[in-house]
Length: 373
Ligand code: SF4
Image (cartoon, rainbow, N blue to C red; front, side, top):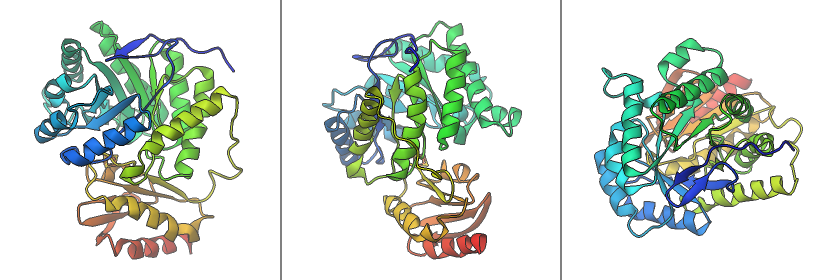
């Protein structure tokens, strides 16, 4: 193994990450934030499983009000995911120790302001409220200008976006930040994080394979990425994103710690021959935006029903909401994004139709059979 990479240390409440601090294992509440009881239950489950930090998504003023009640009495360090509404930073910062913003979502609001001004404003809030920041880059939500500049090269687009945002924070001497670069393809996660770490070796990195899907495949995809990065000193915190029932979310922590223990002990799992051949099912892990909890069962039903295509090199994506679902299913051969009462079925970028949760598998199978027969 290479000698460990030594990043700057940053502080998230009572936690220190980076440098020689132990790798931190974190997760995220999968429930709607406004469902206060369910989200508090997520915090209980994740802290009982040993989470070092828990992230909660916030997208509206009502979510902020709910957050204030959700966090009452919890001492685990918390992060807020600002999703598309970065302007909520000011309202949520007093309740948490870290803010995650997605550079790909900053253009939605206040279009007359520059991205640099918006980042500076978020950093000022973080500074005032003693919060850390995460620049959270995701291949499924790259900012439009990076998509345009690098249309066929997601890794380069992600690294460029991440380093540009680091440069903005550096310019104003804000140092309490880390970066994440995620994709559903573990190979791309490895490539992009290696390239970012080579360019900015001092910046702490949060690792994850997004939309890894259901166990065991979701665990294997994540392990593939982490085994290629962590032994080389790349990564200071991690999350394993799994599509599992809300009450089983503690698995994300347990699996994360198991992967770390295996890497530490030199127990590397070889990827089964042909793992990347054949049908690939990706599914989001759910978050506060999830529109119907049935989405978790639907993902399992899709996995069962599509076994007939196991040998075919196709991707099926299942996403839990209307906000990220339409875009994040674009690259799949068949995509399903779930609304409160219905599921939208896509073939590539084209919408096939909208179906009830009970009927969508039949429609999916018609499309699937036409692709494989
Ligand atoms: S697709 Fe929607 S519900 Fe799923 S994790 Fe992303 S934002 Fe959350």
